[in-house]
Image 1 (cartoon, one colour):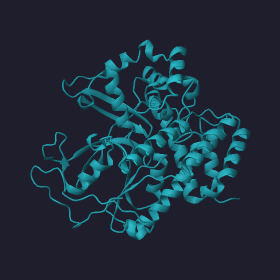
Image 2 (spheres, rainbow, N blue to C red):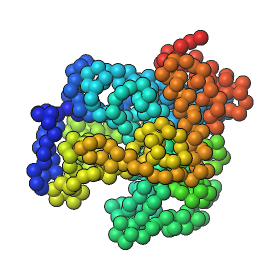
Image 3 (cartoon, rainbow, N blue to C red):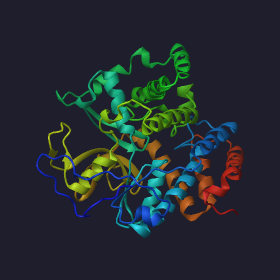
Image 4 (tube, helix red, strand yellow):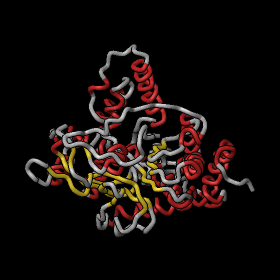
Length: 426
């Protein structure tokens, strides 16, 4: 959470300035009134018992024959993750509405679409959901195309973690790069044959190298480009959460909870050593984070934006690559009110999502299934009724096909987690 240290009036940046000239102060408090009182902007990224619960979400459904490869944002395990996250975030929102009802809330908590939908339905807070998958997709494109990232321009739309680039071009030449992207993905190296799979398995055991495997061993991405002609912004572990054939196409994938937990521990160690003065890594020279919450805050708060070349400030509106918002005609062939991921602009008047037209109807069909599941999960979380949660598990394409088996799986997870789900036991 960020709070101004001086006058709450919006600052006017001097000509040539790229900063509000205000110090950054980091404080902590367990008292909501102290932590939240007067906050103009709030960032929420919250998980409770992250790793042990994710292991349950991932491992228990597999024992019953679920075909998920991640168990975080889609699939039967994600229904339980959603219920826990929504309960946590809506609890935070209650305090925000009490202590800073005019705050602008940026939700960074997964499952992104479901948590953001719950905020939309259960609160009156101004809010947006944010994810870095678009930037990750741009980084991979830069590597694969061998074009500097700053030269690439793109647009994408869909639902979070199932969003597709609809435009890719070279800023310098204006060239449409999509024909080149589609041709590139026809190459044999993107067949991900048994040899490449064996190599990936071996490299995945090497710390830090496992990150590259996670990002570039993507048979499911190849399938979507070759079948639908559009490139996902995300990698297999995310887009595979929403389609029933993910396991069949991918054959092998790192166990996500193990990969992410190990990576998080390594990063935590680096940050701790840096904070204690035991690291010589010049983190301050790495440049500005590509995450987009702060450009939004900068645009809304100051009415201006810092220029990328460091030569002062530029006029708004500020272009934002991906925001998660309730659909108000931004994607024509997805339901109104569903949480969609689209580009936007930001200025002193707020956030302005851009209308993108329709998405490929074949992909929209996958999305509408997930939107229906999201609706059921959020209904269960807000009402406390377990029936919609069971219906969401029953209809998920990654759940066991046999209903009795799916119900046994649901009951197993229910018994393990009922005390943290916020549902009423019948």
